[in-house]
Image (cartoon, rainbow, N blue to C red; front, side, top):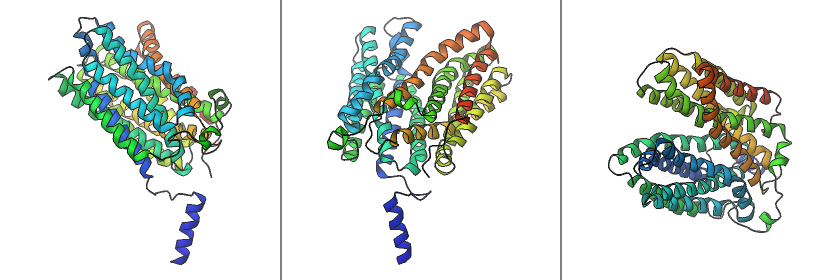
Length: 412
């Protein structure tokens, strides 16, 4: 017993974690917050375009309200990265939740289209703040041997919230177009109070001597690391496919090519989400045990092959199978990619400020999400759906090649 106790003490003193050790409480708090934030976002997702149309505007204007949130996230990212270095992670996290909560409540009382557009855009800035600060907190709280699992758990919380949220939101829209925004605001305010209380006193929660003396890792400096560059390519693929091409092209593919009701598009998107949910935690565990590169290589290859497959599918069965496998590839990629970024930032020291590097990383994914639907749509109109999905396959293949030459970052 004494020998066992001494070995356990030695493991704790060196920071080595057992493979199956439970994630720290603070990480579980962040995962819970991610679920609540995502479920709230999902609640308002069905209401945004419908509420916009209630002000007698066209489809393009209604879509503009959705785009305004994403564009503001992209534009505000550099400033959000600087705020992390000056204020600390927890204050930025709480301020971000407060801003999105207030903007959501304001949307519920919008009197015209212009107000709704402005209030929704402000929420995008707050979204960037809590996303960046949560990612930075995960880096500083997670032991190196747990970064893959921590990233996988965080992503799983978001995914499950995004799956459950629209179901609730769809039911609320039938009752009131304004109610989803008020409920989202209440969820965010509750998350702010609970998470803020449980996370106070953690690393990066405020300013201080350690933070003021911390070395800042800029985006340009991070670019010198080949693994960070590889992570950028993977994040661009993630934004392009998950938030862009799948949502924009798959519903059109179902109607135009397969000649099936649009309800099959919902099943295909659910298959994507199911595949991702099935492999997120697996990807995190593989990243912590076998290294970051292996699951990313397998995942990016899977996304490339299944993207090409989607362009040539002629049956509903093929659509669902390719969708599930493509989602599984995405789930394998996400945790090790985030863990790699964390490794690069943490290499400068536990208290290093990686806010600007994280902001650049997030912006690359947002650029993929914004440009993916537009460019893929143009290719689909001029060259057909096989060509549009082939472009996605090529982009994923480029990411695969970049990871072949990226060094392993998992601390040994």
